[in-house]
Length: 259
Ligand code: 48F
Image (cartoon, rainbow, N blue to C red; front, top):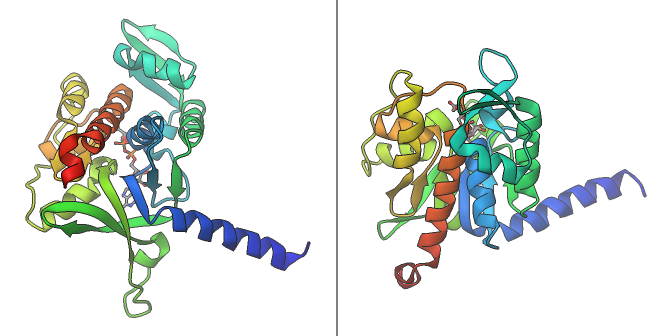
């Protein structure tokens, strides 16, 4: 074994993985809490799921509870999902629970990877593939490419096909913004904080915003102008789970097979 063997094994591993993910059932853009839960929910049923994450790490805003403190809170409604994943928590008030960010986040990542979800990190969503009025894929590039000045590099992105795209990019709502930029949907931008309204509405409004695109997590509040919610995560889980179920319903529906 020498240096070349190490290099070759890394390149081969990536090549084999990439060949498998050029076509998917679902591509989840964004590996924060809502995206991880959505991916896990879909992969549980044996569907092929790819998470595209622009950072080198998964978890998004779930590592920390807010104001640089580690405690992340949940309300009663998400307790079953925490139990399913094996996240430990303690009760701190009427229907309110707290857990440690790093512990909860790493357990969620592990539990998603365990369901055989594929991850492309350092990969930036750049555009959609659109055919016959339906989104049928994503256009991606390495994250560092977007940081280089155009006069130094002009690197074309590449396309990845999928039946459904889930926008789980948090407040930025990057996929939805792309649809808006192309005049395909209208968006409002998220409103000021109101946790009770936001937690309920984000889950309620989670759904398909354009044929082939489902929005979940805080991206929902950006699309529909809902209040922001601050450092509480129950609805991220519930919204991700709902997005996963909607994706499966679409893929397994008779109408979809005809498309
Ligand atoms: O922001 P994020 O954690 O979104 P979320 O799942 O959860 C929101 C909460 O963390 C918190 C909150 C509720 O309590 O207010 O903010 O809705 O995760 C979004 C992920 O998307 C990635 C980003 O790096 C993060 O990991 N992302 C954003 N833009 C892109 C992207 C992009 N263009 N390409 C790939 N990944």
